[in-house]
Length: 146
Image 1 (cartoon, rainbow, N blue to C red):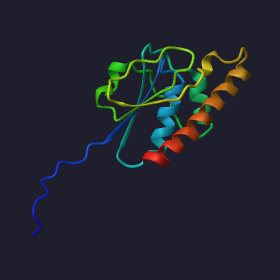
Image 2 (cartoon, rainbow, N blue to C red; image 1 turned 120 degrees about the horizontal axis):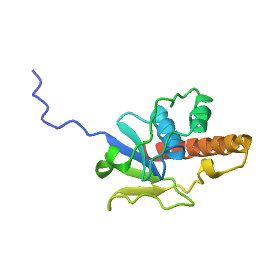
Image 3 (cartoon, one colour; image 1 turned 90 degrees about the horizontal axis):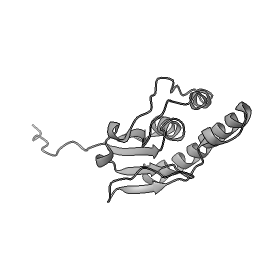
């Protein structure tokens, strides 16, 4: 008979993406990270001033067969920020949310695709470029940390 294992179960590692509105960049990053995360990771996103999900974020993710149509923008209070193992801030032109001291913080400065381009076509291009940039960065993150 095997003796009982008294070691507590390993806690999942938390990865949180933050930006201001949680309507585009951080939502895209959360979705990409969730579909590629190694076992044992929990993925979240939030914003310091949440707004409605941007429809172009939903559209460019659907091009990759990732459905985020049921996602909603979340505030910092909606995610386990104090338990975060890694926080990735995605702000470039605005002030990013503050993160708890001692947290592993990575800063990926990405322009908000919502503010890029004056036509829908240009905005689509900006959202696609943001998505593709985030996919590359997240793939590299998992290779280094996963």
